[in-house]
Length: 341
Image (cartoon, rainbow, N blue to C red; front, side):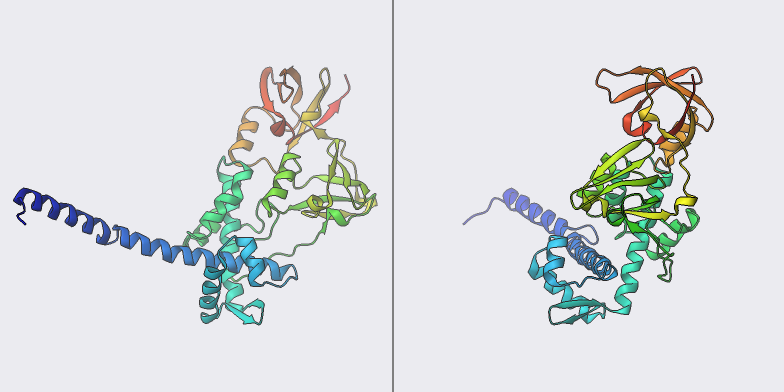
């Protein structure tokens, strides 16, 4: 068979180009595939360590089926990664039980430290919505090196707690003391302060966010049975299922030490009522908090409803002679005290 020289040269060029794309050092497809495969194994290893640590910390036992369902990973791949982790002395396999070793716990705590520091960074230094903190931190916990994590901690002033109230492990794996009781276990009449909002599983955390329940809020339990928990806080009543209430931790306050401050959420202020700003919730952080302060929502500022949208989910408030529109979720994070007209 006779080949046209031009055709042969073209074929040679195409093959050479494809080989270059595949085997190019550091940027070729083969190199990228190997890197992705290696990275994927590292990510899954760290996810397993973190999941096992949380299970053990809550008094539960980890096994292959629990990890498979929690991480949504193929069982064959999971068994392979677990065997590699056991060979590296990160965990012990005892029949159907999986137990972290000392080095495994230390590794898990380092991942948790990076995760919680990154959430703190997003909350304090960026305009990211709190619904995005956890998802973003889930990515960065696998990317930041130990040195980068410590630089981040120093930049943030070496915080002890993350935005949800979870203690941030120290570089040596020690955590601050954490005392509190799940809201679901508090009896009627109990008074306290919310100190922690669990952000996993996300579908439950999302329900907490939708109700604008915030850390540091004073509460009083009004009802608690197997079907629902009702509590009063900041001028309104909240009704939750036991499953949701289980993810809210409260520091109990003795009756004699509890004083009703008399303030409520700006979102509850009615037309023709007047009030003064008491504070901005700790849940309003970073750029969002600075913006509200710049607009005049500072302690002692007189405020009243100026306009109400037809849909009712946005109001304009008169602050220092200026009408400022806020969504309900924004107004719910500004605390005010009513003034007599």
